[in-house]
Image 1: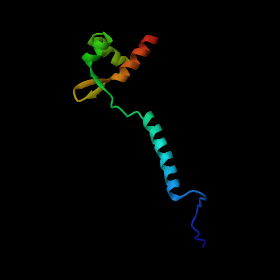
Image 2 (image 1 turned 180 degrees about the vertical axis):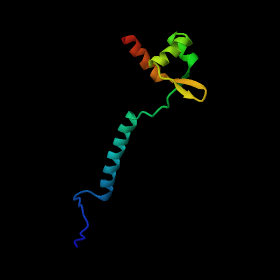
Image 3 (image 1 turned 90 degrees about the horizontal axis):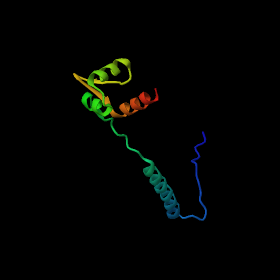
Image 4 (image 1 turned 135 degrees about the horizontal axis):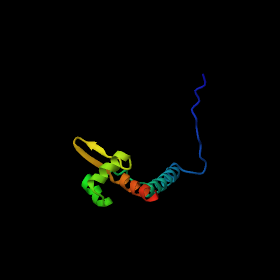
Length: 97
């Protein structure tokens, strides 16, 4: 069985220079990643009243839109909530039709 370890030799570069070169590249890559990083924000939930005020419709219209599938309500026990992002998307789709 051949157990030769893989060896890489660098000629004309000291170990410290090689280490610094790697660190410089890693730091540059981390800086690029940190500039483009967008943390995941949890969805914001709105009450029926807040949504009706935003959309300027009555609670009855809101219930009707739930039944028609225009809005997607989320039940949390006895409470009904809506994701704010989905409300924005619903506004866009309502305006298109």
